[in-house]
Length: 634
View 1 (spheres, rainbow, N blue to C red):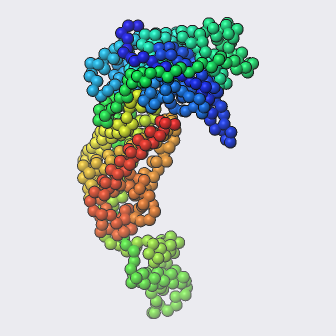
View 2 (view 1 turned 90 degrees about the vertical axis):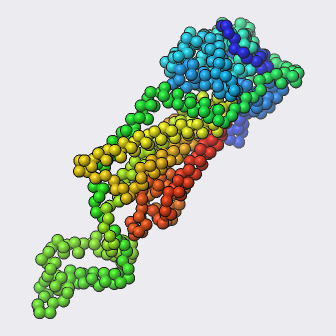
View 3 (view 1 turned 180 degrees about the vertical axis):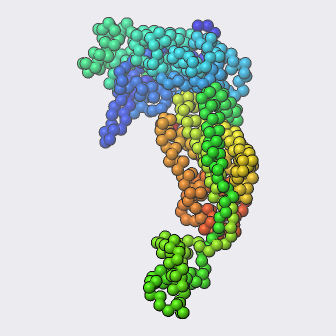
């Protein structure tokens, strides 16, 4: 390999009698015990061991994700600092690049995130070409990563880490899913990188066949370091012909043979620490713009996601139109109010007369010259059996009783066009935007978790990342909102030519206001979904939580359950974006009787709903950053 990557010399790592224990109930479990070894700068070491031997714990200690219970870890002869851990590269088993991007674009973004903000485009392009050539993937520069072979994908992940110019590179089971030929190529690349670039490399692997390319083997078993040295010496020491026989013998015998502990190196001169590459501090705005461009590139390159983002809103629009095109939006409705005291007295008297009439028998009427009102009514009822059956029904009796108790408004006030069809249509559209918001955020972060775990130590700012993630979701939602709502309005406008009625303008805000509040409601729900995506470790886990967040938006929006006062109204105002979004879309006439209002007393104008939605959005974005930071530290 030519065109070496300009990297500082590797770290000198020393484990000095490191023991690591974890609590287990009232006791503790010892994962590693008195492990001592040294990794020299520019060395290539393979870490071998069966499952549960302690390899993953050793890697966590190297990466600074855990601290030794006993003993010490030295880097260049001193306790490591937080900046030292940022100079350690890590290639896990999962790919740490976006597979929807081409190799060149993925590595360009990786270089931008790992280099200072003022690095020129020419310098970035040169660095990408060098690392591609060093790993033999320069011919794949314009190929989408998803179309590469498994071995080539791993080399792209290696290239992304090498662009950060690490002093220690840990490759953790990165070749476990590869075929033997691909595994051999990766191991050869690692050996040459250590030799030519001076990077200290530790490779954790289950494939022992190619481990002979390493300078030394480190074998752990049962938490003990049982061997340190070259492959040939290991075979002779354990008296076997193949490395796999070492593990069989250790498991069968249960013996933990350990070499003499390696003595820790003497502290290096203080100047060696100052020669290290300083920590790179990135600005919020440059990273925000860079990450936003990457989100856009990934989105455009992922044809399936692009198609879904276009087709789902169109499907929702057509479904809403088909469902409401036959609705009579101008059907009359009678507004009613509760009875006052005088009306209740009159109803009691009239209802009593009706009950008397129902109780009288036709044969009891003997003197037709002096008929009472009840008797006259009974004669009428006998002639009209359907009316008689209705006046004697239990349903009517319950209605009269509830009206007298003030529970049911019965007195007509005015006749209007029924607002219910218009409200139903507007809430249906709003709920569609709510679903799109949750779709935009639920998989956004958890789908990039493996990438984030590597980019955060390399210098990615979580505040810029979350802000870019939310902004990108908001832009997509804006396009979906404008396209969907405008198309739906045009369809209803055209339907008037077919003698169909459209939604009543008096019951809904102008189109511009509708678009703003529908979009803001979708953004608030996208923020909630991002919070879930930040704490979830798997996409399925996030999808399982989302229905619990959708249900309050449906129930507490104000349409299904009138929210005039009490705990439910407070709950809707606090946790439901649909409550404020719906209030910003529909118009509620303050002259309507209270029983006909879906909301309680509200102040005129749209200022309060707008501020409420903006506060919900700000809260979710800030909380997402906090939750993501804690989640990545677990």
